[in-house]
Image (cartoon, rainbow over all chains, first blue to last red; front, side):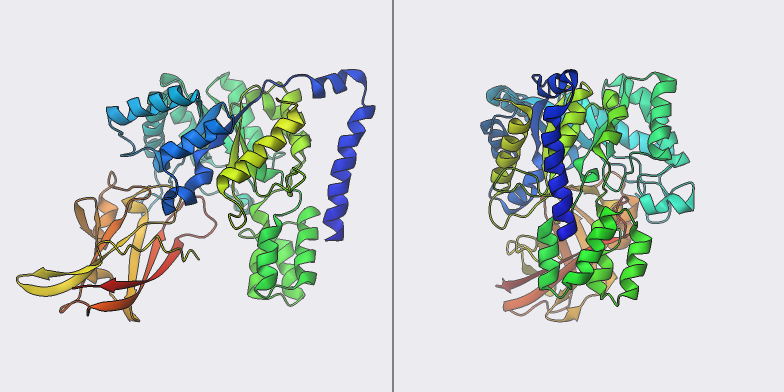
Length: 373
Length: 132
């Protein structure tokens, strides 16, 4: 893991370099942030399924840690989705009121493979989105973390980046959904989740649509899974215990960091005599589930960001995210004038502590970076 | 590889009768996926008890009060398997299961459009006990 440690040190060194930046930039980096903290109920999914927490106790917990916003998934958190009772909706608003929270983001999905024998048409996909627009609006949400409709890529070579690909069907869906988003006054923030490449025709095409239409109802929701500089170590440790070999795992990590890509990495691991576990980790279901974008490449998109998924996997004891260069990403957002929510989305282990503890540590870290009291 | 114990429920595990005879058993299962889904996304449930595998047409599924054959799930685009709610699997087996412990396995296959592998297969296992 020498390589990754070196990269990490460069990150810290990079932070230290700020001190020597010209005055104007330093002021920008240290001025009072306008960003707000939120957490997604998503992270507490296991607690809710196991029964140790309820939706209501999760909302109370998010408020208790000092967050201002709460994010939810209609399909996971709203009873009788998509038609909750008016009693439940009143209860939701009373929860917000009681805990002094604001609705930060609402997550939508597009099940393009709804039927076993055909994809949804773009019209059907837009109709399903309208159901969520209506519900989000009813629950007081303005900002949607919207999944890019996962249709096949127009160019088969692009399929490696699926579902974040140029796709005529996906674009048609968004164009058909746009007047509906305006109608319900919700903003479709296309999620930039890994394996998104921020510098890509895919991103350019969405930017082009935003700029050509001049719409205020289409933008982006960056997810920090696309800034994974080194992969979470829990998974690697687990695989090493199960029979993966250090040398091969080291190779996979360095290939990822050198942006070798899943196809070539898998081919190389095959040559090295990789076993099934190592081969899987070398591909899109493994390490390339993450992407390693330069946070600077987010800068041109910040004016169109309405919501942010502050994804995290592990906060270390010294309050650093093990995998993601948080200082760099937050600086790009702050300097770009982003003034909405950073919504914690935990996808880490619960072996040592609860989801609540993980998110509290995450908020402590973000507060320290942003100088929030 | 979710083996968590809360997916296959103790509650509701029992034989049922039809025309006065024990005709099969039912078992309730909760999904481990993080959101509820429309039922056409379900490719199917596989059920195994003590190594005995049941055929697709022996297994029916009930969401709240609505009972469907597995092949019919495609035809109900507004029906949902709501998050954290059990689906009742009703398995035809003349004579039912014997009282006592059983090793129960359920595999659910779902088309999650954004996943690299379609369908997603979630495997649940539990040791349950049947009274009658």
